[in-house]
Image (cartoon, rainbow over all chains, first blue to last red; front, side, top):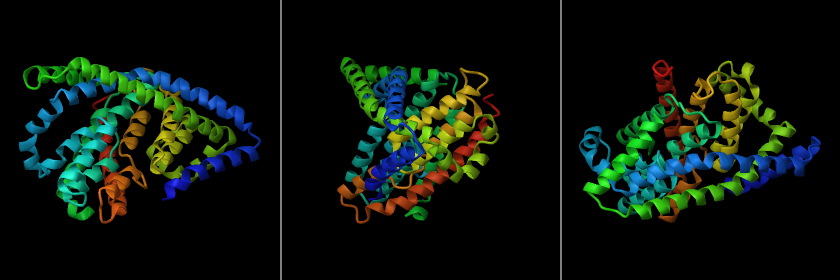
Length: 170
Length: 192
């Protein structure tokens, strides 16, 4: 429950430190807030565009079909079929991943191997598509080179290792 | 890269729905647009507040203090960046620290600021620099000390020990990070 106290203590620390250093806290805060508004306006089109494609892909049933097609490969790689949706959804959508994880935990049990793997995937990888469209979108970089491919392969490799050596992590 | 993936996601989505699973696309589009705008509106407030706090950290010199703590690993991960643009490193440190503490809302403004600083020393403005890619990749491993959301969902569903996920999550994050850094070093040659 550190997190409950952490935020207020951190904010208090920043404010007190700024006051001691003679920073005009109110004016500087407003200045920062202005930047925050600008940033959101800059990234909004990128988020909308990416979320649109993700929603079409998910809700058209393409994601489910993709999961079915991958079944033989998953058997070969020793990935429990229950956690496959989790591996695929996590890079695409944060809220989607939460609901998939909850589903897996309800179906297989929260302390089951499937439930445990889903929780690990949830906590150990980022919503890569979101991060990339947000960060590169905000500065207008269009050629992202190997950022996405490396992040995706690393995510999948790490999921395969977790599924095969889950006894190490439990 | 993003162009192709974005195109394929929509193409495959629409084709699958035609031949396999007829759905109401008008509805999907409307809901998708609405959820994006809702996300942006909720981001507006929280980003403004954390950007305000970020500005205070910046103006008071607090970020330099935090930087000193993590200086060594940063020098290894981002060689030469200290000489080129020290401010970028300050923001990278603040972004990683906020992420580790589970403050993802605070992490975003710091991360964007870090990208802006790295863009200043980027020779090709429309192309990602090596520093940016390394930063994104470190971010994608999502190292956090307390995965609060996961723990609370586990607790809600009646896990015998909800917080026993903490250690394994950190271990897997570090594993993902190491794999990603190795892959990055390999792929860098092919994506000049």
